[in-house]
Image 1: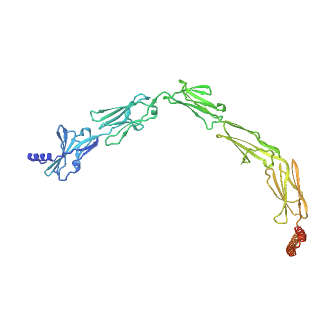
Image 2 (image 1 turned 30 degrees about the horizontal axis):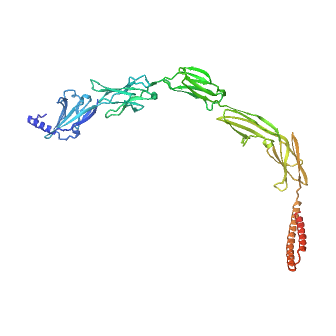
Image 3 (image 1 turned 180 degrees about the horizontal axis):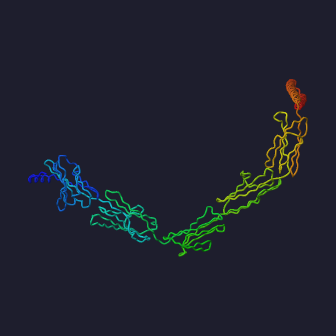
Length: 558
């Protein structure tokens, strides 16, 4: 290393004083990390002759750290605690390892370029996040309306000292009034210089704080917020209100179980209660509930519960056991003779309003079935359904109307082929009537026996005009009806044509007579007008003509 003459050094010193940077740059570093302290913010020219890093020991005394001359590697000149901790970066920044609070001082970079000397001081500040944030010395319980020490929030080993905020349900607590008191103190470690902040919270609890979560937080400069784990506390207070809760199926019907629970708002909650069961006192210990099994309609009424140590504090609830009973005067198979009356009677015993519906053979009826005279068509399955508040009851009977059979219709018609006659016998009766004919024929169809009705069809080919009878019978009687059936042959076609010809001829004769009458009547009226004769004679002649026309008309109809 070349030594500078004393005059040269003096000149450089004067120049340095003239070019010393007036502004002081501040750099923040993290505790325990390697610090990079820039020289002139890294803006150093390449033609540097000499660069030197030094620091302020205090009381104006400088301390050398390292020196670098052009073309040479840097050399460490420090002989104190910095000897093994300093080095030089490529951009001439000072690298300082294992930063600690004692490194919070001014470091100066002196640069010699050509004939100029410049100094760039840097103020170093060291930050450290708290190592932990927790609530200690927690209270076992909090009293209502009483200022109680809740706990202490501790933020350990920080720089600068942490500022702590208390939170309730994630909202800041403010020390105001008589309900909240917060006291903070800072303890500095004499060895490390790091600070521990202790914030103590005194709190006057309310009932609503039974489930409240308390925590604390701190926001350190340059770091993320720290929040402690939340804690909860038991809030003690005497019972002020109780209520009776009823647990039962809906709807509550006979045979079910009902559980009564007495709920008190005290903490700790009472464990002994009196249950008032419709005038009967039932005390319980170490429980808050009582179960009534297999309830009936007689259990309907008012129930109460109260504190054993304070009977005046009580609560009550009304219990209604719903029931629905029905009784139908008819059931099973019901048999009535035709034309007899039938009046089913439905009796209902229920705890509320009911709805009744009737069906016959699964088809809904508009009204209750009542009959002054039953008929065969009234036979069928009758069902009633009674409902009330989710409850339902049903009853049924099957009606059979019996009696002697009666033929309602006996008719005939020509078969599809034009040669057969179809005879149809329709009858009513119950039990099912047996059907017989007075002539042998082919059974065409026997309809289904429904509601006491039956239809029987046969086909016959009569060779002569005859009378055919249909007979229906069952255990209650017999009915017979006859019908005339004419024969059908090939000559019938010629006879039909002859009859049609006679009818047509008569119609033509009537038309001719009508025209003649019209002409004669017209001439008679004209003669009378000319001669002044009366029209009495003409009227008689007109009457005779009308009688003749009517006679011919009757012949044509025959």
